Image 1 (cartoon, one colour):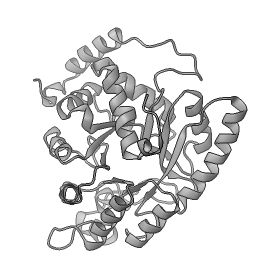
Image 2 (cartoon, rainbow, N blue to C red):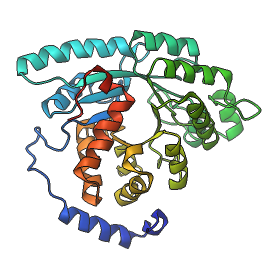
Image 3 (cartoon, rainbow, N blue to C red):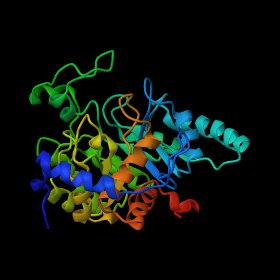
Image 4 (cartoon, rainbow, N blue to C red):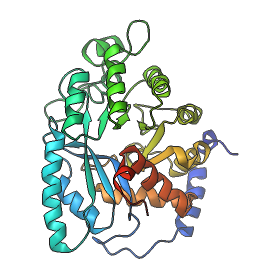
Amino acid sequence: MQTTETLDSPKTRYVKSYAARLAYKSETQYPPEISGVRNAIDVHCHAHEGQQDALALAKYASRNGMSGILYKTITGRNRPARTCQRLRDELIRWCESEKISPVTCWAGYMTDCAGPPSAQTVRDQLQTGVKAVWMPVTMHANTLSKVGFLDNSRKPNGALPWEEALKVGHYLLDNRGRLKQEIREIMRIVADCEAALFFGHATHLEIFAMAEEVDKLGFKRAVVDHPFSPFVDLSVEQMQRLAHVGIYLNFTYDELSPLLGVDPYTMYQAIRIIGPEHVILSSDGGDPLFPNSVECIRLIRAYMQAFGLSDKEIHQVSTVNPGTVVGAGQRGFSFT
């Protein structure tokens, strides 16, 4: 099988993409009514301040037949479940007037939202209705060492040296290279509550330490986001190792966007090697430089199908697997 390392040349990318775009056929698009997202569940959606509006997005997703949205961030992020409940109430009223089915909406919580990761805070958030927990992202030492802090205008202000990033940011391992007790406790709480756990912007050492803990717990709702992004930067062989212990690899439109520029065929080939049963497709949408998350889902599904995923495999990676992560099937949620 051809490896991803042979796909870097512009000529190779041009030939593969040209063949895909000519061969791929979809239903005719009639914006804002679109096809290609029905039953999809987006488990990585941003809708906090300055990004896409959470309710407008949920209406658009409902209008076009999506099944679910997990908001990684949403306005009022200190109490995301409360914000999400208000959104659901408004969405249901609107959908009743429009005579359409509402998309199911869930709230996520970032452990670096209000200080260091705290087991008690995670427990409290899960009790309010949060369905997924993210390990540190923007305040992780890994993020700070690559782009720095976000200033008041939400712009990164320059990478920090690693030792300085460790002093001011979050890191999940102790001095012996083991997961800190607080992190292990967070993972146990999330597993006991049957919620989802996303690894955030962890380094490779942290990712594989968490993977070992996931394996010990027998936990089946762990996810590594955007594995090709510079924050995570996993090889396909590393992705395979994580999939082997039941961790999902969540590929995102963010990686395919011009901002990161991952070749869609490289992503497709990674999925083919790892196996669709271990993969999720999501948007990581919300930034004004991206399409809205519904369109991101349409695009990433279309790209992967154009390069070779079957209808059944698209359903697996964008409905069944993300539905499993958020526990949708436990409540009579239909995967059809």
